[in-house]
Length: 537
Image (cartoon, rainbow, N blue to C red; front, side):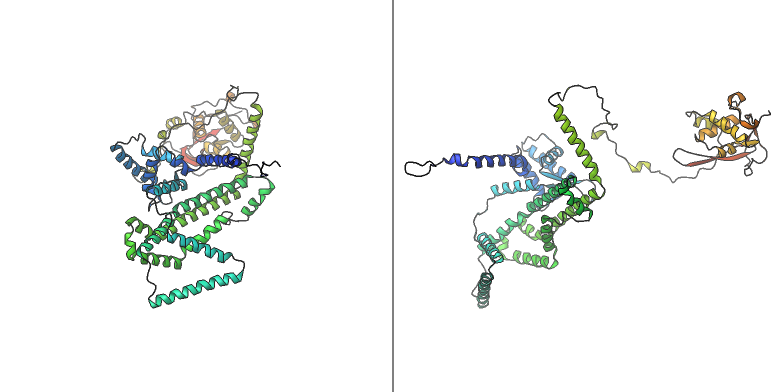
């Protein structure tokens, strides 16, 4: 090792020794600036407008508001600012959309009505708190804050001391000090603290309490990250992640059983404990009745009174989010939906691999002969959509029963005018039926051969029976056993073969027939009774 003339090791310059650490810190801060929404909000062009507007509506007693209500409130603020000379070219809806895309607003589905709600993200809350600390600086060093820190350190030292003798000695000293104070209070020698000190302590309490909403935001964001991480682990097919699937199939709540889930569950039990809640409310009432509390602003008094309600509301919201994440993750696994996502992931990876292989040999914008089938869904703007109105299907009057009516053959033909009737099939059906019976009605033919074309088959048989379409022997396939095709039928005056007595209509006799529709429904009608007979050999 080289030394200097005095025998001391060479001194390296501070810049050379700390360069790697400084560079790493520089990269870390650059990445944080790109990813952290609080930093991006502080650096935004309209940071004052954003923090002033959103802080006014979402950083006070109200932490969540319907999306349309917030847009309307922001629009009123913009109108007021424009009247004072501010140039704000965009609409409130556009501003809110930009703030949402930048991660400063979080939209969630409303649980009480249709639509969404807006709330500040954790980063936006932190940025607003930084701005508040700059505009209303607080005392950095107070006796109460130092005493609180000292007391917490003492408790931590006692609780973590492995030496029981030291633990007992410390607790004994604390007990003796407490007994001495009790005796002084009984003798009237320990008056209440000065008003200045009381106000100082109360403001320190309010400062710590004001940080809780951002803490809740961080907790919620952490659970969202945990949910996304667990879904990624479910998609992994290697053996190291197999235990995640096994636990999910056994019904284990991985989110609730995580370190964050157990810690939050303990916090929520304390918040929802009726006895602890009643004691907290009583303490708040007594403090606000003291003389020194008159130095608080109305907003600070309201915040202190609603503090426990805030804890319960935010705690229940996070609990509901955790339960939703757990149900969604369990459903994602038990429904085997992750198999589809795995297949999609594998296809994407394979496409990327092939793309990297082809990249040195071809350009991504080179024309190819491949034609891709576009989606059948028409692409249009949201304004082109027509909302479905259930009321449009309601009738002004109650449905009425329509009595049976006679329908002429011309009307039936008009009903089936766009249908191409398969007359060859119908002729074969008639001939096959007459090969087994000396005569047959249209109903007998439909009984043996159900209507394959619905009402069109019935119209075709009626046309054949009435002679509207000839049944000439040359147009039919000869039938075995000497049976010849039928000529057009004649109106029967008796009973249809094998059927019930016909109903008497305007033509003298009718018979019931039925056919099936494409939707599976069965239709029935009474038609004139015609009989097909064999022609003589």
